[in-house]
Amino acid sequence: MRLRILDRGHDLPTRLTFAVARRMARAEVPEVIKVAAYRHRYFGTPFHVLVQDLMRGPSSWTVGERELFAAFTSSRNQCQFCTTAHQAFAAFCTSDDLVAAALVAPAAAPVRPQVAAVLTFLDTLAGPSERITADDVLAVRAAGVDDLALEEAVRISTLFHVINRVMDAAGAGPLEGRSLDLARRIVMGAGYQLPPTIRWLSRGH
Amino acid sequence: MATKDPAPSWLAAQRREREWQRLLARLRDAPGHLPSTVRRAVFDNAEVPADLAPFVDTVVRCAHRLTDGDVAALVRAGYSEDEIFEAIIVAAAGAADRRLQAARRTMAEA
Image (cartoon, rainbow over all chains, first blue to last red; front, side, top):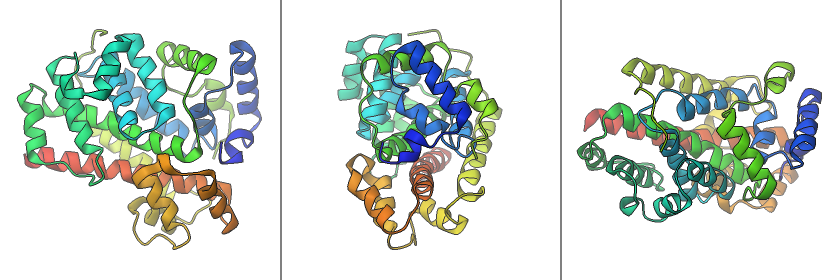
């Protein structure tokens, strides 16, 4: 990665956790975990508490739909790392074809109309003006999405507007091969929080 | 797709906004390497120090276009890797929060 601290700046509990993960998975630790684990009390831990809540907590949206919102925002931001990761996670819940279609043409994707309407809204929100109009909101409501559900989807997208930029600035490439398999096993099994050995033992300020 | 959980309440939405604002406050004002005043400017992408401003603007607008050279230039200008790390995260959080608040405002008005 572009910042050496993200490859070699972690403290001892984090380095030991990474060593065990590498040995068990025979794969490199996914770069997002390296970013989140560095000074994790400043950004990684509180950020991923929010990610866990929105992506796996009580919601108007299924896990697959939430992963699709994440993949779509990441694709819109042209973040290769997050797009490859969340495209795979969304496909794990649905199908490769459905997710690929939704990323290319959300309004025509084979998803329920509420999801298509939200994807269209998120597409506009991701634009350079950082703006949205009343008509955009009314279109989502007309598709049968209430404001609490829309706000949830926007919050998911918001978290990915953060992490997409962070991963791109850090220089992360696409997530592939065994590292993608490792990430999918971790995220679809245990969720988004950092390993307890890092959360509890790493000072990380 | 998997079965969805019960939809959250208005109270849960308020809690999520408080937790998001707590994260933003930490990113801007917790003890760090960049002064809090600089981090606040980076968050707003306004009045950022001149040698940092182009980098921050690229993180905000098109982070995928950043190169190794952009980071190396900041290091040459005297920024530490920890300062660059904070600038990236705070700039990204600012870009994200402007979209969230624009959406919330418009939903309240529509």
